[in-house]
Length: 300
Image 1 (cartoon, rainbow, N blue to C red):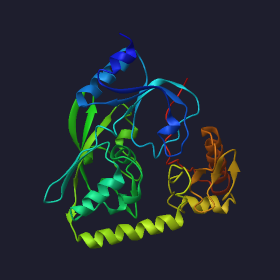
Image 2 (image 1 turned 180 degrees about the vertical axis):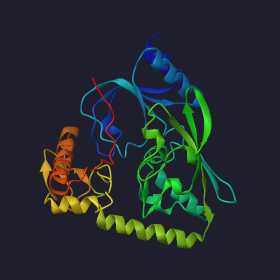
Image 3 (image 1 turned 60 degrees about the horizontal axis):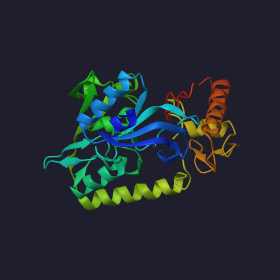
Image 4 (image 1 turned 30 degrees about the vertical axis):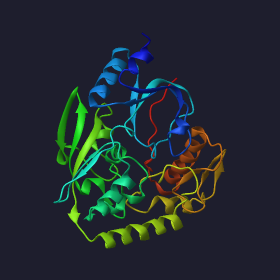
């Protein structure tokens, strides 16, 4: 039995799968294996098989905050979107949701259950797992503000970990320091609310996003975290870089903290623009801009 055939005992497996098909940037070279595990048991066995052969792997959500390099990768991408996407709303506002749930869909389901607290997530085009990894947020709220605990696979054990042990802060969590930990699900505390008011709030914020963000172009959302002194877009504007283009990547004319794929952009094009901005911020303002976009280790 080939190794690929062995993996297929535990899930759907694609070979030499272009990551440009799985990221909102529409950028990324092929992964040797792209795997949808059938269950937690299957996930654990897949990871074990890969580790036994020293094959690198990473867990991917919806690819909305990711810049995958252009090169081919002799590794495995494990995707949880298809099989880890159940959610459960209890009457008193407790929400259990699996890592593959799409954040906008989860926010809509909360609205349908007349639960408030997830409205800010309705415009974040990622998965819950990815959102928990980076503590995704908007409108001065984030996932950690409603989070109670996370179901984590670490050291071959599945366990619930309280939020207080996960070092949550602005766009940060302990998961960024422990890439071998895998988020499986989470428990949240929502509150009862008025369904019509929640719906109207989500609709008004969607209109604001459409007006202010370049949602018509492939991108990964905000490129840089906001420093304490001034927002990233203002730094980029003061550097005179709004609208700057390298190859197929462009600093958006609509919102300068978005680098968009303006047509056939490579990861190298995006990285060149990011470097241009970071060097300018360092030179002109003495600021070290921190990318919000994740760039995985991806070696041929």
